[in-house]
Amino acid sequence: MPFNLLVIRYEPARLTMVVIPKCGSTTLISTFLILAGLGDKAKAPRQFRRSEGSTALMAAHGLTMEAMPLPALIALHETHPEDRLVTVMRDPAQRFLSGYFSKINRFAKRYAKSVYLWGKLCQAFEGPRAWGDVNRGNRHMLAHISFERFLRGFEEHGTEWDSHFASQARMIGLGRLRYDRIFALERLDSELIPALADFGVPAEALARLEALPRMNRTSRAGDGREALLTPEIRARIAKLYTDDHVALGGAA
Image 1 (spheres, rainbow, N blue to C red):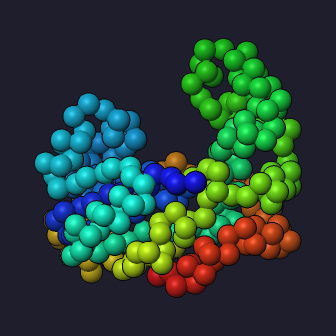
Image 2 (tube, one colour):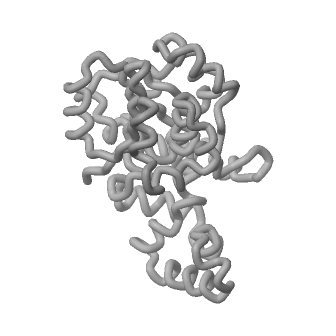
């Protein structure tokens, strides 16, 4: 199934960043807004992208952000072959675990409809403040779908029905496009800013970025979620994402 990718192009450095779902996307959007001198928009980056006039404002600062399918990305890179093409990939087990907690509703709607309807009903009964918060419904669905059941569902049905669970390597066209650098999300804090300097991001832009604005994390140290990733579970997830492990073996 073809998916759209968010593609960020920063003209001052001739840099194209391909953003994969569940791989630090909110952080990357905020990072490039800060680099472009739009730091006041970086605190709520997704809301800003949806706002009227955001495209023109970003363009005036040398920045574009556009969702596009892989063929359009290939065409864009052919139009700008001088651009450095980079992306960020994530440990497949960590990405899968994050998807369990934040996107369980997508799985339930497709493969556990009764659980999905129950979760949404409970969310509705929590009152108007809960209606716009998908996590409120997700909590009820998680109570009825174990991580083991979730994983079995992907082993049975595959991963390519939703962009948040699809193979990262296949989504970005690895093999059809040559990436100048693939960053591992787990090392992004220490490696992205020095790399941006190497890529030619202007010094005045880098001066705005003292540290990465890490945002929208679905797990934190001590929350107990890591315990779900036993060696046996990791091995099963690895079988779902063989291409991603190969690609990450060459990541920066």
